[in-house]
Length: 408
Image (cartoon, rainbow, N blue to C red):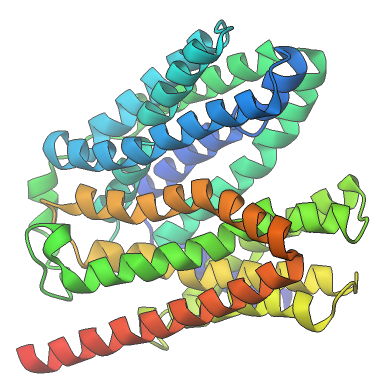
């Protein structure tokens, strides 16, 4: 039994190029330094003694910079290539942390935080395009799952170390974040070879669907983005508003909230690669995406059906985690399938922007609904939005099937 399980994991992680593993290592180094952003509000209010409103303004500027950075990163990826955008994003972003450390006024903090995320978030579409470049259609979804594994492990390490550094001195958060960014850039520079995009792309005739030159003219993809935003808002709300509900309404202590949320990263690390390996050829990508979206709604439905029941909390965490594992790798892979080498950065950027927009809007919208109408009304709304998103993805799937029939 143990040997069989070990073989399954070996097969799930096997068959990917050296560059894919190196890119995952770059992501792990980068995300392991994620310390400043999670502690930004605490730093501004506790160390610099600004009001919560001022801190919110700085965080909002960082979010706005991230949205614009993702879009510009995609544009630059198509013009300059994914390798150089990743390299300069990591290096310049790392140096900006050392600048941000010395800012002491709201205007300079807002401007520097905006620039930091503008530069830093440009890494995402370039990295996504790079994974597509170094993978094959057969292992692409698993390649994205491996990258997500690196992100989740990094996110588990970064904030944990950040909490330790913050107790010593907040400046060490900026130093550590800057060093890890620059280290990731050096790792990429010296260990990942920059190949010629055109030469590699000629080796793989990987397009499964016809595409237009611009992502904005790809009607199926633009519809898909609308329903991705709805799903992303529902998903992000779980990690921004739900912990507040647990603490304020259910009186769960912070340490247990941390353990509950930590289950998400542990499950992703242990299960996602194996899950993708076993199921990816059984159904269409949009089918798995739809199932993932429904599971997101089910996680909130548990709160409605079992109000005040503490035992349902780990069940909800497991459910939202399987929602993530089913939907996100296939969404990423499907985005790449609809692109060409010439517009892949644009496609990746628009897809990444869905999560950037959700990250900014989910806490605001969720907080407003919960404050005015109560948490349980919010859960009901999110169940409804998840169902709308699911039906939307089913509609997108019917459009792709119909288009395939016409073309055949």
